[in-house]
Structures are given as C-alpha cells and as structure tokens.
Length: 266
Image (cartoon, rainbow, N blue to C red; front, side, top):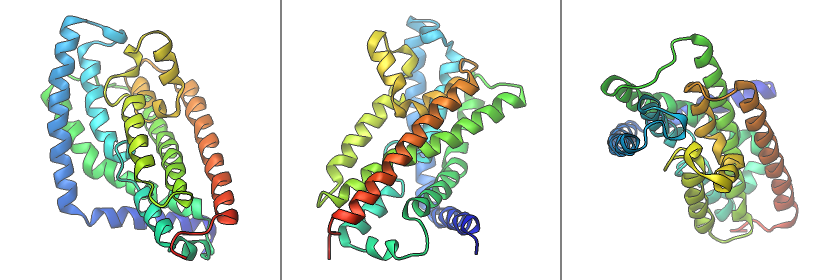
C-alpha cells in the first residue's frame, strides 16, 4: 500500500471509529443545539442594543453562533480530539510501538484526526447548524463559490487545529501529566478562536492581537468568508502560514522528544 493510500485508510478508519459512538453523537447534537439557543438569544440582545456591531447584522451573527456550535467538536476547540489518546499513549509508553510503525507519527495522527473531524462535522455539526438556519433569520450565501471558498477554509482550519493540539499532546513527553497544558490550551482556544465573542468586535490592540493568533483560523476566518467579510485568498495565506508553522514546530518537537526524552512507562 502506498503512503497516500495508507493515510487515506487511516482517515477512513478514524471516521468509522467515531461513527460507532452513536449515543455520544446524539448527546453532542442536543448539547450543541441547547448552547446554540442560549448564545443566539444572548447575541441578539446584544445586537439589539448595538446594531451592526463589528460590521455584522443580526442575521450574520446568528449564522456565526451556529457555525461555532458546528465547529466546536469538529475542530476540538474545547478538546475531544485525538490528542487525548496520543497523550495517554505517551504517558504509558505505548507510543514506542507507534514509532516502530512503517508510518510517520505526525501524519498518522493527522489522518486519524481528519477522519474524526469530518465525522464530527457531518454527524454532530450539521444538525445544529440546520436547526439554527431554519428556526432563526440567518445569513446564508446563495452563490456556490462562497460555499466552496468557505469549505476550503474549513479544511485549513482542521490542519491548524491539529497543529495546535499536536504540540499540546507532545508536551506529555516532558511532563508526567499533560492535563494542565491541555486545560490552558482549551481556555486560550475558547477565547482566541471567537467561541465566546466574535473577534471582529474586540477593540484596539487586543483585537489586532487575537486576530493574528492561530486560533482565529479555526472559527473566525471561515466565518468571515461565509458572511461575506473575508478575502478568501488572504484568509488561505493566513491559515496556510499558521498550518506550516505549527506542523513544522510539531515535527521539530517530535524529533527532539524521540531523540532525547525517555518515554514515560519504560
């Protein structure tokens, strides 16, 4: 089997694996829908007081809310990606087996995470988004080109999201327990991705800083394209640059860990 076919098979396996957790998926759909309802009414109240805040109208911010709920599990902004399993394998020493496989460690876990992400997008993200679009006045582009540009940005967001979480997982090589690093990453991710508030309403220097960080590639960047406020090419360059930086840093960190660090557990 060629290298490309191998990683495609790994991604398909990741998709099928997460598809078996039907009860968890149903619970996730319900949770995302419930939180989406809370956020929609909160944001609509804010936009009633401040119409066109951040250059968006109420229909656009409603769409943004449901995009956030669709992407929460897809991009594992609040955790739940393959990094948890990888961290456990590093802690127990089982990662040594992974390193002996005739496959690249980073690409193996990237393929697995992409399979997981596609399932979460279809299985857990689509229903809350469709519910929100049907039950509230939402902004939905009518031209296919915008949707295609949006989905390209989503793919790049998956790469950036994995790049961030892979670095978090590799920190376990140096720590007995990566829980603290993981929780800090979740907190930063929630704030800097725009899950709490859209980044375009952040004022001054704070807004410039959070929009320049890699987490803005996860939700804010694809949303800007879908809502007609983002330049697709510029967005792709921004996301692609962060993907290269993060994946490259992961490669360097992986090399340092496997050469110099004793694997926990033996």
